[in-house]
View 1 (cartoon, rainbow, N blue to C red):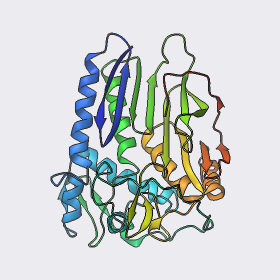
View 2 (cartoon, rainbow, N blue to C red):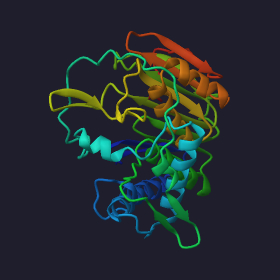
View 3 (tube, rainbow, N blue to C red):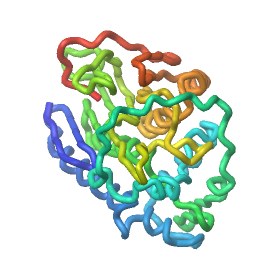
Length: 318
């Protein structure tokens, strides 16, 4: 197997293919760099930054950006609003107006959190007014709305890089960006599946479970690492659409298994914000599987997820 490591979209990147297709690694990594230039809200020339400055005017964007926006809108509807791509203004007001590498990380213990209930958030009228024109190749945001690619961008990038490797002929592939991972084709020789270890968010050096994956995606969202202090209060990047404030859910980490990474990425955020009960119902309604970890260490396996005790050593770990 051949591997390539680097950084994409502000996080660690890992790409792997079977022998004989090493040349595809550099091609896929270059595609990831292109997507970052198009989707990063921290790059002034990106499609997303241009959209957010347009004040309601239509903006011609790349085809992948059309897919990104449409995917976010579909996820917003399907999750009943638990995933909301229209909260960027609130996130920046809380101090997340620079890359997370430039944020001053808060070393204080993770806030305990209290479940705010499972009442569905009201669907945002503004998000429903986003317009995607496939003929013109444009997107229009309603005035006052800022689109946030977080929560879907990394997952969609993982899918596009995985598809590129498969199109190039790779029989076995793995793509990981941060906590979003997808495997394609057949598992490596000697393996019936990819044993993906799930890191314990409360004890980062340990992994309690393995999720066996044959051809699909495993994505994890956590409020443990990306925390900062603004105006004397601890914040994290996962906002509750009911309050436009950092989620107070007791869930500190959610891992979702799906066929594609963008959907698992979205649902990991939605499940964490919704909380253990509402999040479990959401996963079960979609006939998928998830692993939820609460701040007190309580672990919930939701839906159809199959997990195994973690072995002493596995080369694939989230």
